[in-house]
Image (cartoon, rainbow, N blue to C red; front, side, top):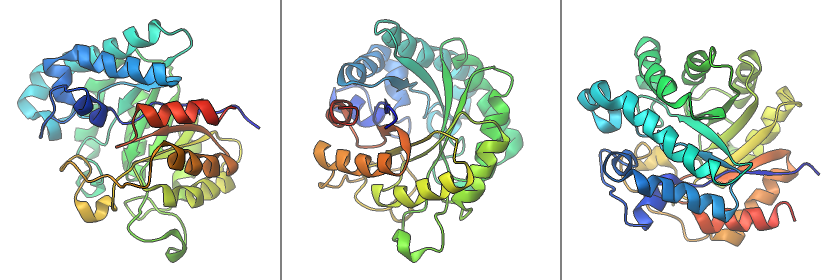
Length: 297
């Protein structure tokens, strides 16, 4: 059995839980702007819980959340600061790596808003600020092939590995779809072929319900049997296709995903070949501790 790499969990809910500044529209970026030490604290909490890879607090550092003016004047500095906070926490814990978060730049679950030219402009600012501090790139919650291809292009000259993580359609049960799909309706098989074309070092699935992850792993493995696979699901009470785009509202969390039950899902994912496991929105330090304790036991 392959050793499992443990990721961290959702940054925003942990910031809210420790009392960090947190509101819309800035979301998790507000803590970075007003109290960056709280961001470092959350990174440290996840490391203590057992995370081997922590993700920079740069998901909300886009005009969609912080506004066009602030992004233009302060985006690069904030991206650098996000990298610094993660790097400081990781350097105090030998062996922990930092993943630079590259979000969907026009809002989560909105592949319809994607513009390649503007996307490269925004991603370029994030990459430049984060690059000195990260060990790898994590393009996460990618809803379409176009979003993922843009992220791959943005980091292509950095010389650092890229993990591509896609969010899945989860508004219907897996057995009611002919094949697993991204939020755009494009297939997971197509996404796996893209991951191979751009030379991704791993392919993951995140910010979707746990129930849809197994089928996606099977579909990806069929296309790319040698590509490392991973999962970090969310704990939302319902599909975000029904509850608005991610991070537009503070979504209700389901009550059947306590740490043991989430770990039960993770065991199913590892049985399908996943070797990178963590958590997304609503998955906290206690979940990560349970994963770290049990998955490599």
